[in-house]
Length: 384
Image 1 (cartoon, one colour):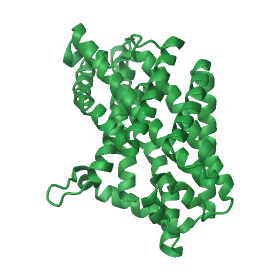
Image 2: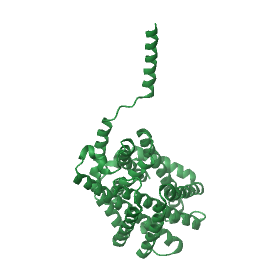
Image 3: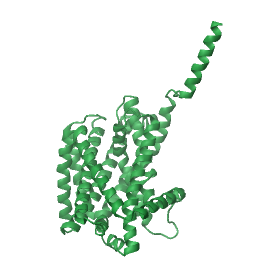
C-alpha cells in the first residue's frame, strides 16, 4: 500500500506540475504560445531546427503516453466485460472497444472544452464518488481507515528509500516493470497533463498552482487506493477470497473480482465499466485538444481537422500495441517515449529559474503594511 501511494503520489504529480507551471507562466503571464520549445528558449535558444526537434519529442511522448493509457483502459474494460458478460478477452474485443472510444471522444471533441469535456468530466467524477462511498461504507470501513493511515506513514517514512530503490545485487524485474514504468508513463503524459492543467489554472498564483497540483490530486488518488485496495486486502486476509490469485492470473479482473465480495455486484461492475469508458473518453478528448494545439503553434482554439487526425493516430497506435504484445508492449512504448523527454524535463527546471530571475520580486503584505506605516510617520514628521 505504501508503494501504491508512492506510485500515484507527489512524485508523479511533480512531473506534471513542472511542465504545466512553465507552459502556463509563458502563456498567461508572458502572452506567448504554449509550446514546449518556447518554454525551453532560455536554455536551448530560438534556432528553428532545435525548436522543431523539441516540439516533435513532446508530441511523440504525448501520443505514446495517451496511447498507453487507452490501451491499459481497454484491457481493464475488456476484463470487466468478460467478468460480467463472459465476452472473452480476445484482441478483436479490444479493437471493438477502441473503436467505440474513438467515436465517443471525437463526438465530445467537436463540442469543445466547455461542453463535451466538461459534462463528461462531471459524469466521471460523480460515478467515481458514488463507487468510492459505496465501497467505503459497505466494505470494512475501520480497516480501510487503518490501512490509509498506515500506508501514509509508510509512504512518508520511506519516501527516499522508495525513490532511490533499485535491484543491482539480487536482480528481479518488479522495479523495472512497475516503479520505472510508472515514472516513464508520467513523463510521457507530462506534456499533455501539464498543458491541460496550465489551461485550467489560468488566473492562479504560482503558490496556488503548486499547492493545488501537488496536494489535491495525490490525496484523492491515495484515498481511492486505500478504499479499494484496503477492501480487497481485507477480503483476502479474512475471508480467503482469492482476489490476489485471480489478479495474478488476469490483472484486468482485479476490480471486478473485488465486487464479487460486495452486494449489488452487477450494478457496481456496470458502473465501473462506464467509469472507465468516460475516463478514457475525457482523457483522449483532452489529448486531441492538446496535441492539436501543440501542432498548430500553441493555438488555444485548434482546428477540428487537427483534432480528428490526432484522434485517429492515438486509437491506431493503441490498437497496434495491444495487437502486438498487450501490457508488455504498452509498458515498453511508454519507456521509449519517455527517455528523451526526461532530459527536457530537467531543462524545464533550469529554464523556469531563469525566467523567474527576470521577474520583479513580489511585495509581501507585511512589507506593504510596514511601508505604509513608515510613509505615514514620515508625513507626520514633515507636517511638524
